Image (cartoon, rainbow, N blue to C red):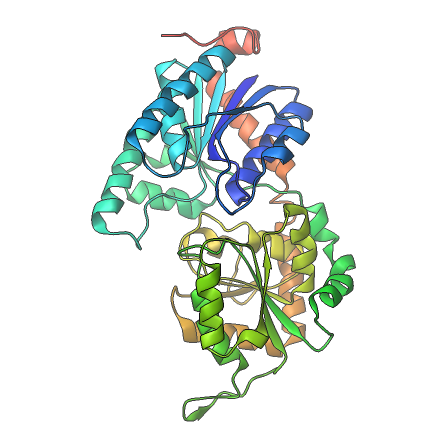
Length: 411
């Protein structure tokens, strides 16, 4: 097949890693011709651009393609994407992220590409927006959904959300969990002692880790507020004995909120209990998870946060807000705990329970590893996506007979 993937930007993130791994698999495991179309990886989050190129993925940079809405740049991006697709002549166009998904689907549809697929990594509309913004993004998604043949959700919860919003009928969706390289997480424990020493932790420390961009709606401020109830010996006039006074919080990632979060931690008198790693390359994530005892995820919107299966495959229990797809891997009482969004007391209580009980941490972590290792292998993800491509192309038998040699109609 000739397959073009379109994504807004190749920053360090779950949707981006998913896309790069899929492109690599299609090229090296299936022998497909692949082109990855993306905007420049701007921002403090880091870049996967060199990783993609090192993996043999041809990349086309559309310079005006940016995340913020900008009518002139967006129109220019649309025509540049369309010209790129016209030259490449794909059998399949697979789009990702809101901006790349809108412009990529519109361009592919105008060219009559036989199979157009869009993955919903996370909905661009959510309850934390104003009503006008939410309605605008829902309308945009409905418009774009009519310009593709199938939609992929990274969690069943994403399908439920999009169907409830009237974006597309349920039969248009397929759930394919976002794949990853699982072996580094399965083998991560061999790095635990070394990394803990490097970070200054001893055997007596219970390390609660959070991996996310330091950005709005990622929930770092909630974790800081909950930390008070985990660390304090007493809260108010009622005893809340800390199960382990040696709890430490490790925040992995960087972003525009770092200064604000550091000030919040200092104002709460918790500076001795928190550590920031800053931006780290993706290959360091398994060893950093190995150094943790519990992984907390307090984001207020995600498709299915990649760190949750990564933690579980590493054998670590998770505590997560019950948003979007989290409950599909954070099985309450079995692989971790689910907490209602913004329930600071509930978040603190769940973290205290796990911090106090190493046997519970081990049991939940091992159950997560057993359940989800094979589910999240990137090879499985790519096989499922390629099967979807084939089913869509079955409507165009000339494409299947002459795989990659018969271009789509070029209206």
